[in-house]
Length: 108
Image (cartoon, rainbow, N blue to C red):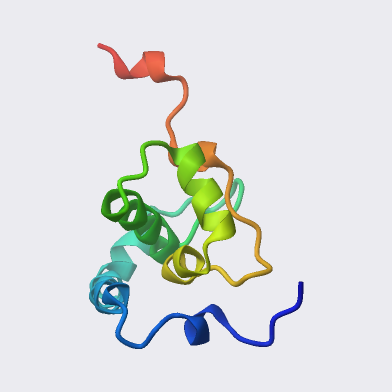
């Protein structure tokens, strides 16, 4: 499927997520130096702060119960793709990118 419209053009101008995204972008802009200092020099590429926070907000706002379901939702929903900053042809992250493994290490 080909689309000549960006996700930005497909989301209604009065959609409530536009205000949330504007606030999120403003906060992330101020926090950017802190996040930049936390990124590793090597290893696999990091997921952008905009996408990580957008992912968490989508999960909370839409009451998605798992990372796997959220990744599926982002895969199919233009609104969710726009909110996390993905274009229609970009690959959605693996659900394990947002989880800590192994879970047994959480118990102390």
